[in-house]
Image (cartoon, rainbow, N blue to C red; front, side, top):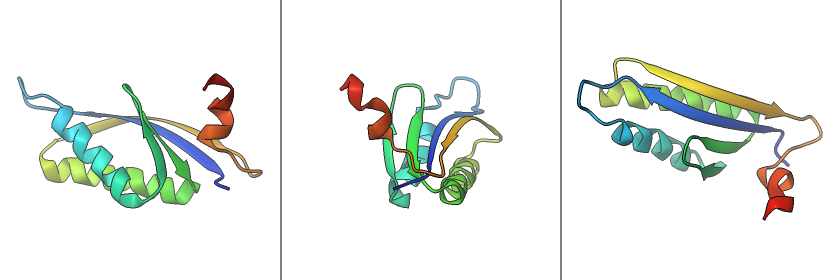
Length: 96
């Protein structure tokens, strides 16, 4: 069982009139290629895994957005960590 949930919202700086959707899509592609369990939501994406692994994915997301042309990125991150294990399903099953 995983020990960490990490939710992230990336807010890339864009040029005037440029939309951020392409950057957000690029960030999600990094998550998809990482092979961790994840869920995309309207305002953030949540990943499930180990803390060091998830933080490395965040680093790669930022690098991908810079490579795509964003001059700077702000990320809002929430982390839930439990030595006994934690999962998205375990926290939300009563609502499904």
